[in-house]
Each structure stands twice: as C-alpha cells, then as structure tokens.
Image (spheres, rainbow, N blue to C red):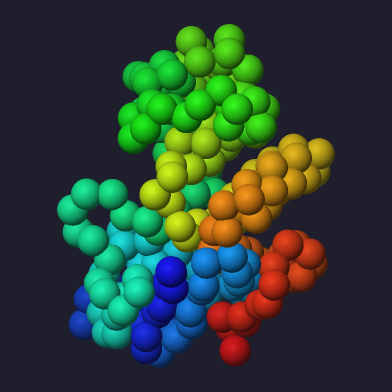
Length: 200
C-alpha cells in the first residue's frame, strides 16, 4: 500500500498566505519517512491533509492511486501531539479505547497499558499514559499507514524512548508505513528509513 501526496498546497482562504506550497511525497508500507521542519512550516497541516482531516487547496492525496475514503474506516491514521485533546474528557478510558475496535490483551500489554487504567478518566492519567491509549486505539488490523505528528514532544525523555520503541516494534511486525513529523532532526534520523525537509 502506498500513500502519496501529489503537488499539495494549502491556505485557509483566497486572501490568506500559503501554509504549504506544492508538496509531493510518498510513503510505502514498511517505510518510515521523517518529515522535518522548524515550527511554522505547516507540519501539522500536512499531517491532517495526509490523514484526510483537511482537504488541500490544490493537489491531492491518494492511497494506492485512489482518494482517501470519506466514509468508513481509513487505513491512514493520525496520532496527535497532544493526547489530552484527542480523547473525550467525559469518557472513561475503556470506552475511548474500544471506540473503533477492541484491542486484545497482547496489544495492551505491549503498549504498557495497565488494566486499572481502563476505569480511569483522562484527567487521572499522565500524558505518556494517555498517548499509549491514543496509539493503541488506532492499531486496528486495517491500519496500514501511521501519521505521527510530534507524538513525543510533550513527554519526558524516558517515556519518549518507551513509546517510540513500542511503536517501531509494532510497525515492523505489521509492515506499517509511517510518516514521522518532527522538528527534531536527530529523532528522524534515528527512527526513519529516510527524511524529507519540508522547509526546503
């Protein structure tokens, strides 16, 4: 499976400046592509476009040569930088986790999710614990490409390493493609098979 952005440009309206201009890239299953740029170069906007949450002003995003599905499950899934903004504060974590599918115990164990966390509210968990839930709930058998938007920036160094090690192991096991969107060039070089400079 291949995710492809073809000549993607984006701005919020015709009077606004361009956030992205003529961006083209592709991500194959099993490939980890680092998308690197400082803040303000449209990395999060590109993440949302690649996952189908935002439509480009120009260009297109294709999965195996077809447009991303507008209904049903999309094989391209986005993990956000701020897990606390990705969950419903009125839902206990078990409901959040099982919203799309029910992960098996082996996946929960691999993600380091403890059973007692399932009965807690989001506000009762740390950022690292919440991010583990946000990752686990999108790792369905149908997920083929992960868009990781600065997913470890808000975490302490030890938790960053733990989350990346778990995610990379699972991606390798399942031959999943990944876009690793970051301002951290060293991180991209460590976890990715190749990098793209968005600011170039």
